[in-house]
Image 1 (cartoon, rainbow, N blue to C red):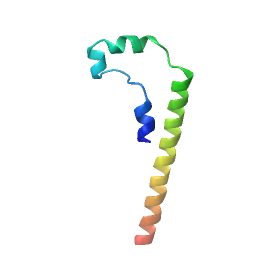
Image 2 (cartoon, helix red, strand yellow):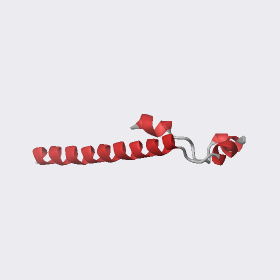
Image 3 (spheres, rainbow, N blue to C red):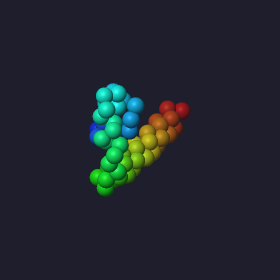
Image 4 (cartoon, helix red, strand yellow):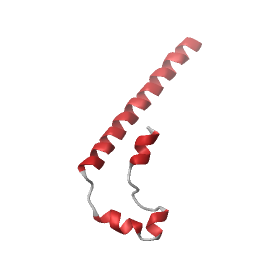
Amino acid sequence: MVTLVLMHKGKGGGLSDMFGGGISSSLGGSSVVERNLDRLTIGVGVVWFASIVVLGLLFKSKGA
């Protein structure tokens, strides 16, 4: 999950924007790879969250 998040391109507000790096990156539109990376990250995030909830409920029922 952390790797997927770190693979995303910065959206502004970082140090690179202070030195003009954000100008060139904002000119290009989102590519197919970026959109697929977004979808993959959201999918993995949903599965991650669901597994945490399910494991929490399982351990809560066994502990009580």
